[in-house]
Length: 142
Ligand code: DQA
Image (cartoon, rainbow, N blue to C red; front, side, top):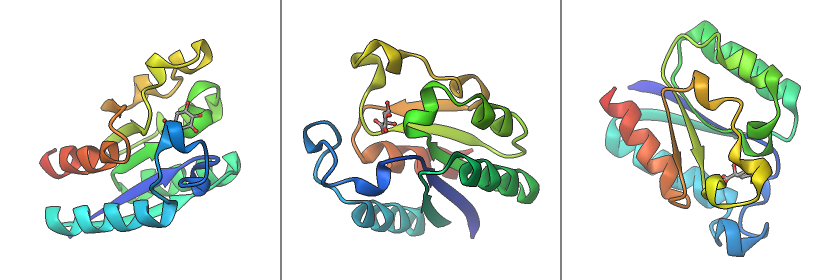
């Protein structure tokens, strides 16, 4: 089975209680289960991680580059300003899909810029936690 990493940035560990009007009622634990189940159905071995720490996230991206592991990434707020994350992602050696639960383009102005989009294969945003399932499908077909 092909390994896939699903990496999540700051505050996504609080899904379910965090602004449910924006991000829905699905908890982070539910999200892990949804990704693992979808992965199994697609023949992918999925590992889901979350961190609030930029250095830890950059380390995970380096590890994925070294092991040539595809990454599905919800960079959360890092999306909008982290050049460190962008530079780490530019070293990727396997597919990278940026995902968002909400549609940042339809929200506040500061969310309209993604500093990581240009180094991803593509972005899936606005489909709630289904954004992750769609990204897993894309990886399975790449
Ligand atoms: C988010 C959108 C970002 O703007 C925000 O900072 C997040 C979550 C999303 O999944 O919709 O933390 O990445």
